Length: 86
Image 1 (cartoon, helix red, strand yellow):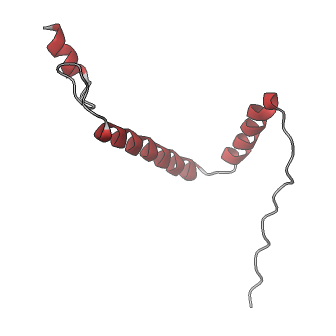
Image 2 (tube, one colour):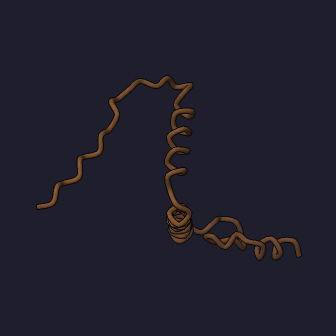
Image 3 (cartoon, one colour):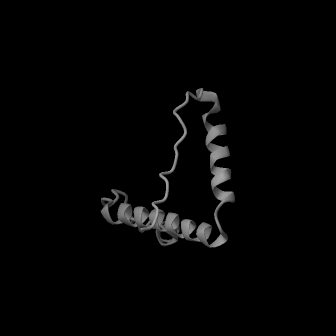
């Protein structure tokens, strides 16, 4: 039989004033990042980028066409600017 790993201990709940919330969260984040390896940080960054990209793509694909002439959906790039300036 192998011994089971002990359950992680969570600290007791505590009150943090509104003016100190960002400070407390920042300190916790710094401790977390310092304990990660470079590979883990890169993987987390890639996952975060994937979430942002998929949210942007789904927003673009589900956006209704614009009421302005020459613009529709997410094709709001430089092409529509060039067409209106000429």
